[in-house]
Length: 275
Image (cartoon, rainbow, N blue to C red; front, side, top):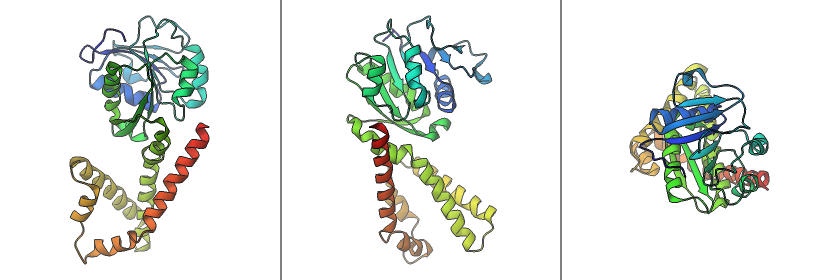
């Protein structure tokens, strides 16, 4: 890895500056993690970054970077990753880390594209990373050094929380839970709102109550990470009260079974897509 530390800033090539790439870049800049960033994106550089002297842009991916990057971040759609890999020449940069957030692209696939000796980290983020509230899970291949893991910690925590796994086969389970999980939460909001409408609330009122209840409950859980979800639930449940009456219905076993089957279906689909 080039002689950079998080105190002086990392040298980064960012391939793709869509929603996720932009969110990562904003997080890095806010935390003063970068010395320089070369953004490779044919769509141009967002206006918010135009005047930052640390950032340069090219619409062409196939080019000499002009510096030795600590990391090349692949924030492109998985369907164009093969083409991008052909245009990025890492021959002079055998120790540069590849950090891929391309969904479904395994370490084996990435090593096939960039070479098995190249340090590679595969990351599964989720959409709340776009506002710095994401949950990312990473797995590294053998050439990745401890300092490069530390760099990933710094760069990815700019988008939320990060956890590492040693067994890449768990990534399908990760995708089923946290990768797809935001959709389940949004469905919960929809379902709560519709149930409220059945009780006589207007659609606008029901949706407002459902959205803010989920937002506030998530924020409450975030402020008390040492308190289990079970205990948080108990804290708002008075024996014999209205909450208990609703929970008696929700906890009769069917809800857990529904989620079990939903995550199993997502995991199975993930394995099929990665086959």
